[in-house]
Image 1 (cartoon, rainbow, N blue to C red):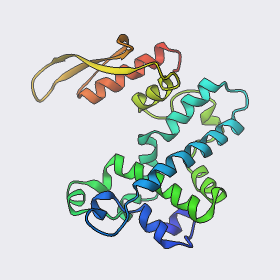
Image 2 (cartoon, rainbow, N blue to C red; image 1 turned 60 degrees about the vertical axis):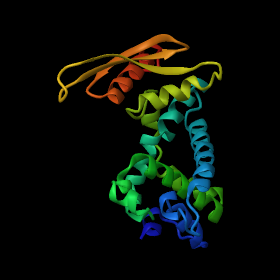
Image 3 (cartoon, rainbow, N blue to C red; image 1 turned 135 degrees about the horizontal axis):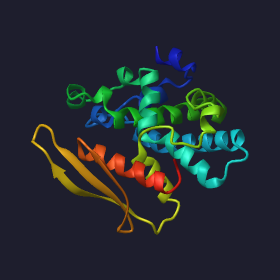
Image 4 (cartoon, rainbow, N blue to C red; image 1 turned 120 degrees about the vertical axis):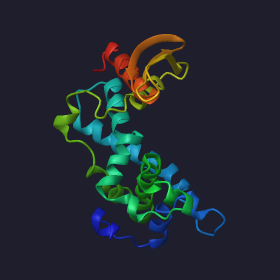
Length: 222
């Protein structure tokens, strides 16, 4: 079923099974989890995406390419890719993860998608992995806008800042107001302890995303 959806038939089915096996299922068993494949898949995805952006956007500077790549390979993006092929329903999960919504958990699906990329790479080589990944990447017209491709501004901002190892991003909760069922949070994002953006939301995470979005706007990335 999955092989038909992704357009690739594995010669080594064990690789596919490994890519679909979450650590909660393999715990205490001989079955290997997908964590090592996830590690490799992250690098393969980055290489394919970088090459694609380099070839498609010949007049875009390095910093802009980095920002675009960050928006493509972040967890939220991979989660969306995984949903397109119904990856959650193909996973092998432990009972605990199964009972607490693991098949729809963003981190689990994103990791499994990277593991699947690695499995295809090991089974069929870089050409097959590239063919698979390119089916999910944004078209040239969308890339040329230069704007973040997703609303996961925290991840994109982190990827940008990480280009300078001495820089450090942190978030601070500035204010919390309202009734328990209707709270409003205000958070700031700090670069080396200097405030570079502030945002509000109905949860701490939402406020942090808004702060990161403002920081990116002030930095000229929107």
